[in-house]
Length: 199
Image 1 (cartoon, rainbow, N blue to C red):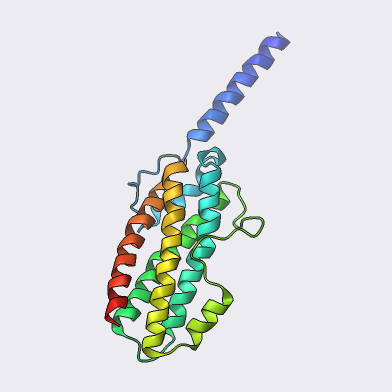
Image 2 (image 1 turned 90 degrees about the vertical axis):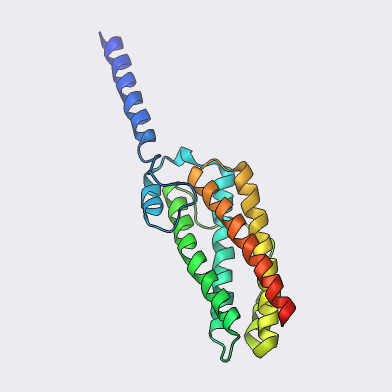
């Protein structure tokens, strides 16, 4: 009877564990529709097994990359007499990437993963402190040109990392965000190149 009781308890425990793993994996949101709060709020309830190493690396690397893009945009928005198109671009980048930083941070916390990557890994397209100092010091058309050149390289690095996640990632929300980043930033790269040619 003791053996039977132990087996039965194990089976029940296993069923509870399986039920727990399935909770929160379907948040009812459409892939890529990340403008609301439903995907972000549902994510922490997902099982830690809902992600793989590619998902973790994607979020850990993309967060500081996005943070720097927002910083670069803030540098430009602090300047006076800026071209209206540059101002609009900087505002668009902030509007898109600020919520994505929060979203990816929430995912990492929900996956019980550190929000920063160990070691000195860096994505392609990241600016050095010297690059940012040059952007801060530049004014007028020179600043606009430098911002576009730097942000094009920055976006190209993001697209490269996002394409890797879209191929290798496991978490549906992370893969959907990666695909959104590829699509939106490729569009912005083209627009920035076109704008740069007019300056």
